[in-house]
Image (cartoon, rainbow, N blue to C red; front, side):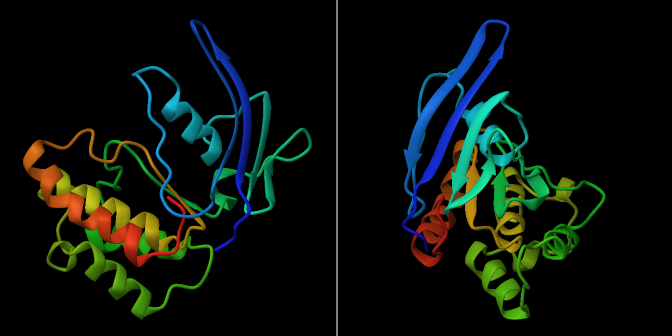
Length: 188
């Protein structure tokens, strides 16, 4: 993985709120942003993902410009996976079909071995034929993480992936998150 930093400068204003950041983060390992509710953590992640467009913004990831005064790479062209606070699975698709949706849009080819390794890493094999409504909160979030990983991201953004999960299901998913850190070479 690249040792070039993620270089982000964003200025974005809404009534009663202004995000003004200038930071460099390592493009390796796990980096955590923390702050009080309303501090702009999610807004920053949305800017990095290209889901928010900052009028004044610069973003370089692994040496590639994703946003500056002349460039704006749309979200679907950024090599990233995004896991939202609430699992955002497509409700009309089974878990297996949600994974297939990501594979079709992957930035690199996904082999059957990649697919099976991801399913095994997150322990979701028995869940594949269920619809999102048939999954617990922790199960939905594990499928959402697998879907993000199968898009073959160069960067994995996770916006409080345990926030909407009860304590029992948090304990269920924590070992899988620990595995991500040790098994994958993707900055999170």
